Length: 198
Image (cartoon, rainbow, N blue to C red):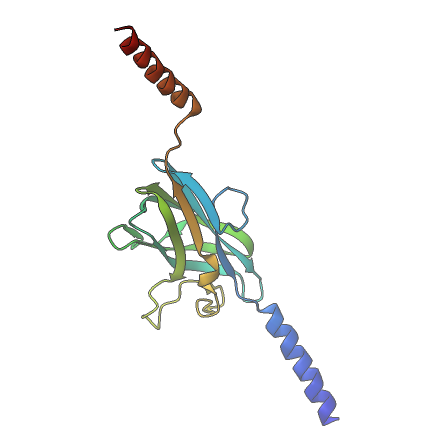
């Protein structure tokens, strides 16, 4: 009888552990609401990273607040703006281009479940190359602070794998249009003819 209770308890604890999966944060660059790990942009243009969270269940009442630090390659990108989707943005939200970080925090009156957008972050391009964007825990040195928090007070921060949200932006050089190449080669040809006649 004791073994049967033990096995039943073990099965129940395993099933509840799988039901308590951690939320997943990710970036989307093309507006389809799905995770993107790479995108390309031409130098001189801007790119917007949409910050999402998924896998938020109702077991702990849903997500009531979130906060994250966005790190980016500041030699190639410059964060120009952010837009918080939630109704109560944090008062200390900021962009710090010299250090390549953006800190965002927000909360809501009604807890959310499922998959939903949290914010938009826009970047201007500075140089060509492969730029990285990564997410991390907000204020990790403050043990009493919780960024991603459930309605019942559960701190999701330590169970979220922020490294899965990393993305690469390929900043490419401005392509020379084919028409311009033809025009320049024609101009060189006309100049050559002019010099021959002289």
